[in-house]
Amino acid sequence: MKTPFFNCVTAVISKDLRAEIRARELVSVMALFALLSLLVFSFALELDKGAREEAVSGVLWVTLVFASLLGFNRSMSQERDQGNLDALLLAPVARTAIFVGKLLGNFIFTLIVGLAMLPLMTMLYGLNLLDGWIILTEAIGIFGLATIGTLLATMTVQTRAREALLPIALLPIALPFLLTAVRATKGILGGAPASEWQGALGMLAAISVIYLVLCLLLYEYIVEE
Amino acid sequence: MGGKTKSTTLDLRMETSPQPRLLRILTVFTILGFAGTLVLGFAVAGTDIQQGEIQRIFYIHMPSFFGAFTAFGLTVVGGIIYLARKSETWDRIALAGVEVGLAFSLINLLTGSIWARPIWNTWWTWDPRLTSAAIMCLTYAAYLMLRAGIDDPGKRRAFMSVYGILAFVTVLITLFIIRIVPETIHPVIVGASPQNAQGGFEATSGVVIALLPSLLLWLTLMPITIMWHRVRLEARIEALNLLKLQALSE
Image 1 (tube, rainbow over the protein chains, first blue to last red):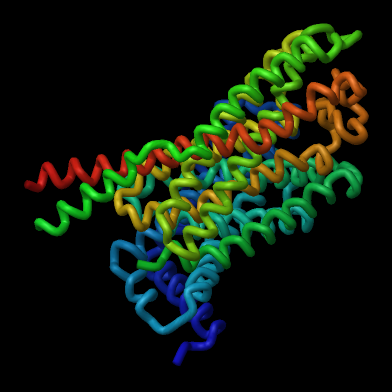
Image 2: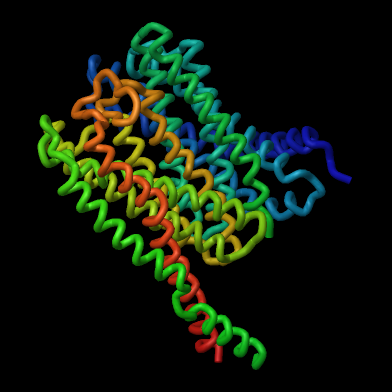
């Protein structure tokens, strides 16, 4: 008899959360990376007031994508190294439930980092990023990233090159998220009328849904032995 | 051990079988068809009044994208059937689709670039459609890198089937992006052009007479024939690797 779907999802999430609370490996690494990246960007781009308004949404999303890459890799390697993935796959649960659990775990961790970046960037760059719409854009964009990130990381941790392959596999597929999310964030930041950026936000949501459906259908095939 | 040797040599003989007659016919038709569309494009279609001779590159530029579309589409089909049936042939078809599609989309980018130099006065611009076409190429280049990084053949086939299906989203985005992000300067020849499009021209009867045969050729014969050759080549490579392994283990 199989464990009900949602019990399994919550079990996987609570396992990830508990491990994270005890070891503090994921969020701390991602947050530190994000902070460094923000500083490096501001030095490298010599961001003055005018350039900041142009570049800030790009800086936000590029940092988020790279930080999330670290997180996805770490989260799947943990499963792999400790042999936990095999144990999960042996358990009489739906494979998609494992996927949804890992996906939501990754989503929560990346979102924490993403939300923490907003007040920090507001202070560093002197632009108000604490806006409901920006938070919504972040949530949708990070959910989309976590969807394909979880699927692809499950694939790449099983390969020879391990960590090195995830960026190569993920970045081109994540670019549609990046394009639409940057466009929406930029519009919101610049105070453009809603009609100008809501299209991009809608498309971001649509792409997330498309990838979510595809990943739910395909996950089964990349964990079977 | 003896039984294994026998089956491998049998495999190899199967893979080196002569080309099926249909493939030969297809090859001849593809070559003749390509020559024919070149004649139509260079000699039969009239010179564009505004753009001059450079407009003729369009008869390869747009069809090559649709050739890539067919090839990448066959990768999706190959991936789905492989996942359902686990038959190696379909995985080879998926791989052939990626390689042929990548080659075609590079032709597409290159011809577009050559055209853009005199018409837009630049080789490259970060236009939404150009960007998404470049992303599409990178996605399939990533497919090949990822494929080379997976040792276990069963895992490699399953993973790459999944990746081939995911990657097709970038093809669809390239196809539809001018409907979604309207501020492109890339002209649309069939249907209404975007407001900012620069360098468009009318699909008059003179254009259609060269475009339609070329489009049909690149949509069907070109990718299918080349992919068929590539599938046979892949089967031989796999058989050869098997023989090598066997020779080393003896």
